[in-house]
Length: 507
Image 1: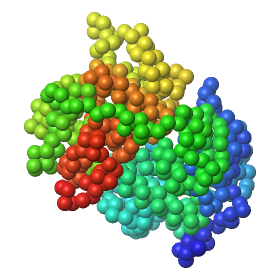
Image 2: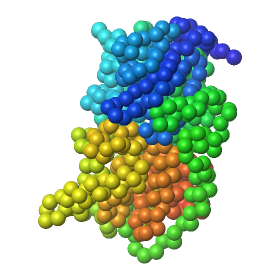
Image 3: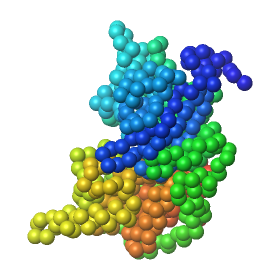
């Protein structure tokens, strides 16, 4: 049944007949030098549908979306927009935006030195003249309230001062804003929940379903398969630059979808639970107390242990990881660290990659002393380390000398894992590191973490995904900067984590 507001939105979207495709690609290819990123892709999107786009890292998903959004031009093929064929030389952002195509890219594109309101103005040029700032702030606040009730984000906040999750919320809201001259008709969401905690992610997916019910279209890219199944009506699977499956979501289950992506389907949860928790032996290698903790509770990490930090995003988990990293090199009254430490950032663009360096240089930078002789870095040792970790973590690149930004987001994250795991660090701190990583790679990394822990390495792991907590020996739940629950693996349940995250009495 169509509500009044849904009917208004349909009427605000000219040409939204269900019989017409908003955008259609046929035989589209894209090459970057010798690298073939897309190999003859066919894809059409009609009004009122949500397409789940899945595939391993490097499958071509983001390249395809950049072509849809007009930020890349196809090498060959046909590009139809709004029922008209567009010459490949004319494919552009302005043409795509002219028919209402918006894209929330995995690597966020906000200007960090501007306020959230000023970023609205950057995206929506029609907001000009006297009073534009007030109008932009109003539109942003309304969009945030509609998508993320209780968000607590000020439109006057400088974007660079916001957490990664809140920056993602602002970018999403900006792309759903409708102005007098422009309405969103197709919104591409590239890993939109990767930096959001479970409750905020649920708000976004619920809004996406409402948007589609009202006649809008969504392309949802996610490695969280539950998000795909709960939201998409149709699933498109990509592998090695080509579409290998395109059919209704009801015709897939998790096993068949993972198999179509090219990975062996196994039950990650059962495998994680089968991994026996370690008994805590000896002195801890890390003891850290959150600055806001008044009752003396502290995170404790022992040798060979995997400890998880849980709770809603932005409640002190990342701050504790940074405290531990600082305490490894400087005296601290809040933390004690016994051992060398490496850090795997979740916000790879701000805290992880060196964007002007090669893939190999990004991998080896933490290990240069070990690769040196008489004060000089051995190029042979450096090349050997690069080759070893390229193979170990299956970093998809023809050449480790290529710039790090030539990799997909998930493959960039693999490089950060390689940097940490290939180093001499005895303790690995991980700040929600699986952002944008495909299901097959996640399994490989989980196995590697358990193997390393079995050999005595210790892991302190903040994650927003409950399934990842199942790989931990012990979990601390955070709320408002404090530890509010400690759970051993045997007593760990999603209900207990959520209850502790929201229940004020628990604090």
